[in-house]
Structure formats: C-alpha cells, structure tokens
Length: 196
Image (cartoon, rainbow, N blue to C red; front, side):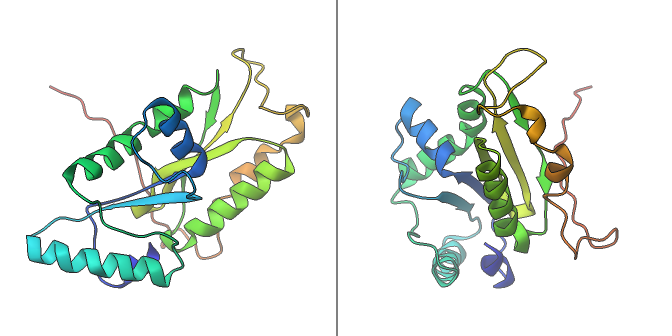
C-alpha cells in the first residue's frame, strides 16, 4: 500500500481485513472473498474512466512489486459491490463472534502498518489470544480487537491463562515507532456529526 501512495496514486479508499474477518464474513454471508488470503486490501479509485484504468494498472503493479500474492481489479460492478459490502460487514462479523471485545483504535505511519500487524500477531501468539484486525489502511488507522469469552465486567480473553498475564502497558506501546513525533505523527479520527 505504501508503494501505491509513493507512486503518486491517491485512492478514494484503502481498507484492510485480516483472514479471520474474511472467513467470518464468508461463514455468515458468502460473497466470494479469498479464504486463503492472509489479509485483504481493498482500493477504491475515482476519476475519469481513462484515469481510473491507468491507476488500476499502477495499483496492481505496485502491489505485485510489494509481494502481494493475488492482485486484481473487480471483475464487474457486482463483485466490487460485494467486496465493499464485506468490508462494511467487518465490524459486525467481529462483534457477533464474541460476547465482549477489546477493540482498539491504533494509528501508525502507513509505512509501518506491516510492523504493527506483525507486533499484534506476536502478542496474540505469546498470550494465546485471538486478536483480529480490520481498519482504514489509507490513513494508518487500524482496529486490533481482542476476542473474549465473558459478558461480565470481569472479562477474560479467549484463553485459559489468567487475563492478568497480558500487560496493557505492552499493548499501549504497540503503535509507537521511533519516527512518530509530535510534529510528524499523523492522527486519524472517527467523528460523528450532529444534525441541527
């Protein structure tokens, strides 16, 4: 994704879902998502038809150069709509899978998204947690979410080990990288509007 942006292409949207989210969506609403994908990036491009066609070629080439295994444009408007329907269903898939979720809102430089994902996977493995990731990859705003097994305030994760072995201090430092400074940190926000 970083290669796409540094190539001068500015997609209207870049969204991300990991394999767990892809599989969960396909279980509940089969849309033809790639079940073998470790994660999936969705790009939406806009502009004139000729500009979009050119940008599609550039996005595909940049993703292939970055090591993506399967990159292609949607076959038609129906498939494109299915992909975006799947992305919109992502949070429902997560929240429908567990009685309680620790959903985080982490923003990192887009060039460090892969590092964040690797770190989250290390934490999940180390503490035997199920942590799924979905997010707005275009601005580095991802949502790692820890699945749990209890509905009470004394929440336990989906694991047999005590929750206290998981350090929130470690979790809170996941998104911190050396180049993130007060002047250089790019923040992303979710905002809700009020109708007058």
